[in-house]
Image (cartoon, rainbow, N blue to C red):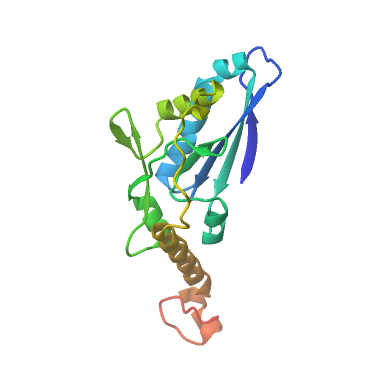
Length: 200
């Protein structure tokens, strides 16, 4: 987890309002959806820099890597990736489809589904810059508090994410249990088989 404060360039006025932009994700290295959404989020903040500067708003960016069911429950995490501005998801609907990157990460037979973003009649696997810009500007001008629908109650960690965490944990355990390479077999296990043994 990391926290950065991004201040727009140009003339600075003392911040009168802080805007917390938070990205919650299953992976920030291999998952194309999470990595692409992070890049688009950073671009969106840069795009609205002059507006933020003019209104005296300060943006704080926080990235949270969700690595377990317990952590998902604590953050009320239901789909990956999720962007929240001042603790509110920037979209209420949680559309998903199969994510090959996360399926590979967990080795899940049933596959892992990640978020799909709907914006201006199109669906995207990475949060579009325009969608994020709009959400930030609504927060800057206080429009998110006007007649905003209540978010759905959190019903716990979805089955999709439980499968992901279980599969990833099993993959990590399997990788850790392979104690020696074929060239080390004789000294490690007293055998000359050609596959890692996993005996320790």
